[in-house]
Image 1 (spheres, rainbow, N blue to C red):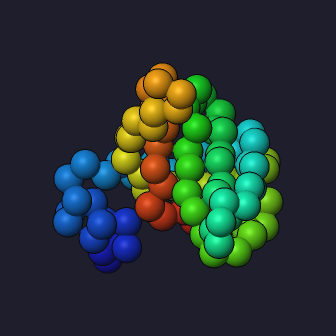
Image 2 (image 1 turned 60 degrees about the vertical axis):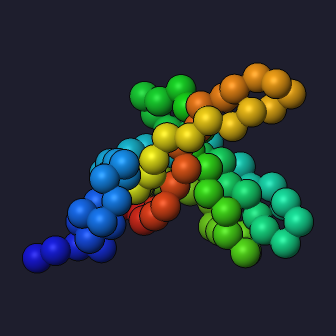
Length: 91
């Protein structure tokens, strides 16, 4: 059985899919008409970010499956590595 994550990975070679990740911190901030979500995961030092139109229930302490790709964001002339989340699902 082919899952949604498998379909995305087949279409986009740069995507990474991870399962069973534990969320240590989940922060939600308003950014114009969007809500920017930042997840910190156990075993990772890089933030995982995504945007939604509405607030999302807190994922802190939850186990999630993520599909993401690495990006670099420049803030005040400094480059920061982040993971841009394409798909998040509670495990």
